[in-house]
Length: 350
Image 1: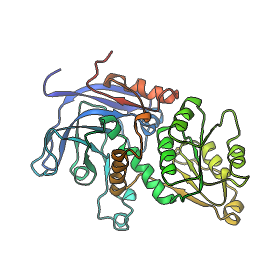
Image 2 (image 1 turned 90 degrees about the vertical axis):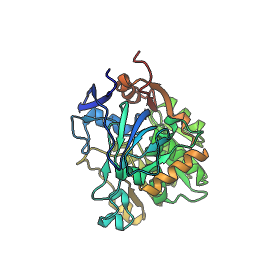
Image 3 (image 1 turned 120 degrees about the vertical axis):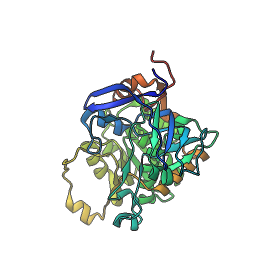
Image 4 (image 1 turned 180 degrees about the horizontal axis):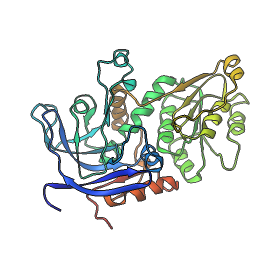
């Protein structure tokens, strides 16, 4: 490969990835050129690979979580220098629209997205450099730092829910990376009990390792009945759904107590609807939350949680693969054999 070329994994449409060689980009005055050291797979990448995504328009560079080394900076960049280890979030708000002025930066009308982390190099747009790029603490690995993006979303949800000491929390889909972080965050809030629900015994074992009070395999036991049995028949105070499936959304609603809070995290296909008992919502005073993304403050908090060890990212990384094997990493997640895979462009293809 020529010295001025790099490899990038392209998304061509559902089920279609292709590794291409392209020129190494040069940063604009407000940009950074990053050498990717770890790009982590995630559920959104998997859903995009399987069925597409409304914000991903093929053909396009693929992937959105990464950390690496600064190679070059534009003339206007002063906070970062070549050689620094950095992690960037893949979005940044405009800071001037109606929603940004309300402090709801995650709902920004002009939210800037950056894709293409499954590559040797990546340019970080100026707005993301200014608002959502951070130096990696020395003791964090690149793969651990790359967890910043999904953890930011978890921090945002937890800020909405305000879990109180002594509350009983159930996490539906607890064996995935988002669920495992919700388990850790809920324990940090001094929840009396965190019930982890998943389809995989292997992933539930990781949830148990990270502190889940009790685990429920929903292939073997009725999760609604199990959660109610564990909460004196009432249901959990807080139920967090992270599986991104209609059945899981309904399970979350059916598992919460009167006066409790349901949070739907896992996105469903656009146009999907579910049937809910409106009487139970009304007379049971059930609070229901949607949640999308997060804010720059959530990202900063996420990095603090990783750096302090409050959130242990190591168990979320099941292994690493070279750039040529991104598709394999996604299929390992799909089969439940990996939580997240770190794609390391420096590994040989074999």
